[in-house]
Length: 132
Image 1 (cartoon, helix red, strand yellow):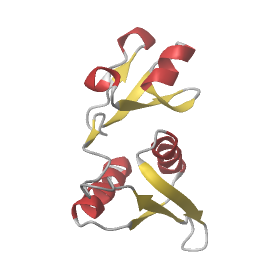
Image 2: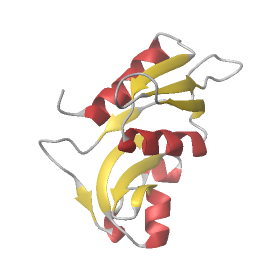
Image 3: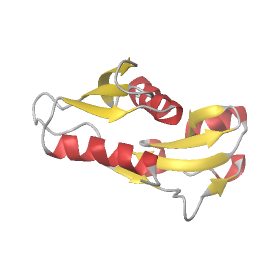
């Protein structure tokens, strides 16, 4: 597997389509940071880092659904930058997802940030994915 972030997003997408409550994915530092951002922005219910399974451990993510409609909170997870075509943007060129209603997750020299945080810190980087 060459694109671990795309695999991470696909596992979440597939678990939501199957109406699973929890999804388990292999852990890495960038996946942990993306999971923290999804939790902080309210897209997932909870998460747990489990370091017992394998050398890298796993991440257990509790998915969030709308109480009335039973639809997933995450409408779309879209991978932007890929190993074959990296997408780098400067601080002034960072994308706005759904005119500010969604988030773009950016890998910057100061860590993995949302587009709003990166704009506030005036730093650019690789656009990893869009979430809305």
